[in-house]
Length: 377
Image (cartoon, rainbow, N blue to C red; front, side):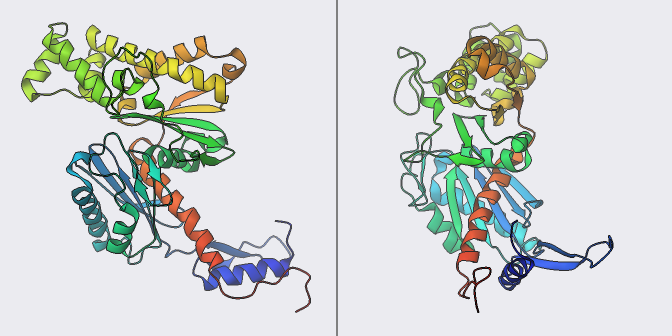
């Protein structure tokens, strides 16, 4: 660390007084004076809340962001902020009632839309009617009695991958979420890049064909209007009704609706129409990513989100297009992989987001004077 022993001891005493670290004992002897072990406090508790278009996931972690308790439930984001946030609070309180977190030190939240960091609120989110400028941060902080930070769900998933996923070995990468919508988390030098207004990475609304279908944002021909959970379900139902897929038609008759999961299961069973849907969507996403790869030159691209559950058939199509259309120098050593964390990327990333802030805020709030090494007392 480049610090003297006395300076390290002074800082550790300060962190211990703040309840951030503890000294569980002495290290194994290696000759000479035995070293003291230092760890993050066992009592630290953070909450990660990942609100998606059709579900909410909640996890409680310790200071090292290991998940201690996890709960998830389905709920439609279109029910509005009051109903959805109440559901999230209920899940957190249920986990706390089981003894997972008597005290909370911070709550991180991801929502599927652009977020104003200053307000802690979504701003004109295309798939979140009724959420515009709703005070998510202040509402949850008042209900749960802890500091709250809010960000776009793709950004927190990227943080989750950076902390504990495949991308933990790199510092510059793209995390692409393919769920109901499509978004991209951009990590530069180990930090999420959000842009001036907080909407960097909103690749789902890149225009790929201006004469294409209407998107949820109101424009036409967006990538998201062609490939995403909602678009894939729409096209699957059209395929089933047209008679091009007996398997999808049978599923539609049984349930009344189709999802991306139905397409994946049909493709896995060898249905050619379902395979064609996945390949077409993967090719469109791959074409958009090829441009991003040539522009950004990342060390890795990670594909996550619910639609990523389509698996290696989707991944193979994306890889094929990106490797063929991007600059050779950008793709010469570029892994394009599926997320290792799957459904927990969001909650881990949300906990990481707020824990980074909590450690900084608590340390800066310490009123005791800090002495510069070598200064006269």
